[in-house]
Length: 133
Image (cartoon, rainbow, N blue to C red; front, side, top):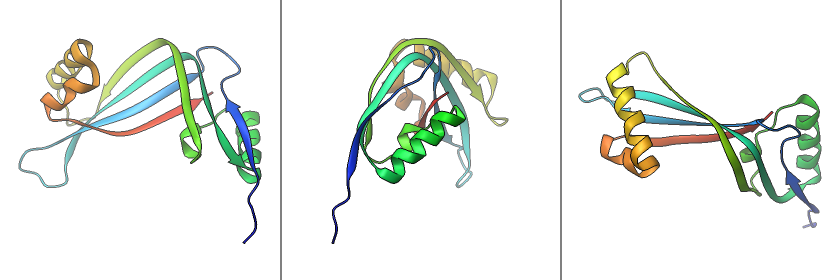
């Protein structure tokens, strides 16, 4: 079995205000199996960095992503977020079956205690997808 050469990289945006992180939260609908209410959070950051080791193939993909102006570092197994700096925006969007009152309760809970407080509302974090633009 041959050795796989890995390259140490640091990945970050070229321009400020170029990172957005999407997190989807879901809450089961009572009495309806496999049905959920969704709220999506879009948070923007001025700067950030991911570091780690990538294969030659992944390095080429990162270069292509850079040329295309969009990259999702979380897609690379050995890249870890180093930091995100200076939050710029925070928006929440609800799906059709989520009421305005539920969205308002979510936003109030988020403002008071952040991620930890969402468990009280019965919601869970579904996925996290940072994207560099």
